[in-house]
Length: 248
Length: 248
DNA sequence: CTGTAGTATGTAACATGCAACTCGGGACAA
DNA sequence: TTGTCCCGAGTTGCATGTTACATACTACAG
Image (cartoon, rainbow over all chains, first blue to last red; front, side, top):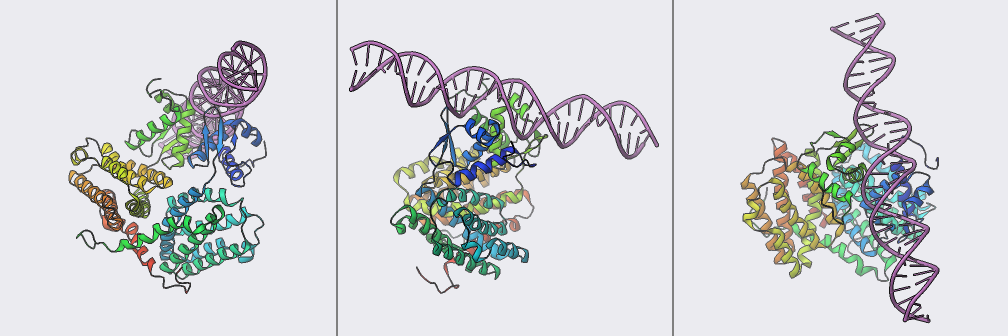
């Protein structure tokens, strides 16, 4: 009964976190089928909070109920990762730009905290801890941008990325690259340089996408190309060759 | 018991739709407090499916549970609308660009269907029906872009927009403008003109934002400025004046 | 009249009960 | 051996029971 810390927090949300974590670390294998009753017994709670937590997870696309059969743990496919990174590029790059515009001293301190120091980042014992630091830094930036919905949306995207990323090995060289890219973004943000920060974020995301997708397919270049180009072409937007309604 | 059509669909999802609709049309007033038991009695189902549906709605930010007090219907503030339109601009404009790139004949037919004809659009008796046609057209475009998560995300954003927009009156002149803008977007998409379609979509979204926010505040210009500029500055991205890492 | 303690009511959160359904596996026929 | 029918274990979806708590209201003291 005390497996889950008996805080003021609702049982349902505690179960939600526990299940989410179990899925991310692969303790609940992708594709596997489970019953609410078994999960409840395992967590030493009744079926209700478990079912309620699973409903939220199902809305996020992490699991799927199968009537009279059980709850399926969904796996994040390479195509899912493409969707995730397309959206992250679309959202995080402009958000980083925005953050640089309105950043305050307190924000900078928060960001520095979230960035952490190189040794701790590289020395993270588990892939999970590393991902937490990674997502934490990104989240801090999005919070600075000031759009709450944006933060939630990207949090959900991260869930899927983590499901895929935790089980696969991360090279230390790649970790060092990631940290360096974070540093670059941080530096530009600190300087209030919107374009620079956005460019740095964009490169960072594109590199991350290449890395992750490369783990799936033999040929990374082709798969990552679509989310990448999606953004590129967006630049042409600034030349309205269409209507005469002109400038505001 | 037969108030809700007894299909193969789960009771919970039917209740979800019913509650969502009730909230959007204002039948459940923003800010009001309700109990799961009363709602269940009213819908002639047990508390379980109602609670489960409300959990999903709470995750989407439409309602909030208050322990031992009830379920609060949340209202969409002007600030919420700013967030919604910032995100819609960030997502839908590039998605429209993308859609124009990969559009197929079958897609064009779908889009024409979703666009509807002018008379039906202008003659929509209720504001709700009008919004449904509006969101339906946008959704068709996003579906063409091919990113499922994108479609879901924007659907949720629409929920909030509808909560605000249904109760307020829409001028017929504005409706005509909206339809014309849809036509413009459709035409560019049909032509496979990415930049043109994106520009048209951008203008359409900015106009919509101005309209909606104008209903809230006396001075529309200032409030809409932030989501607008957020995108504007994004254009500067294409000139990396930052690092020496140059071209890929 | 004013403030306060005590209590009754209503609620979400959680636990449990129940029914319809899926599906694997075994008995059995050919 | 092979195919078919049937049954029972296991599951979700939905209904209902239980508990602790937040709040409004009442009665009463000052």
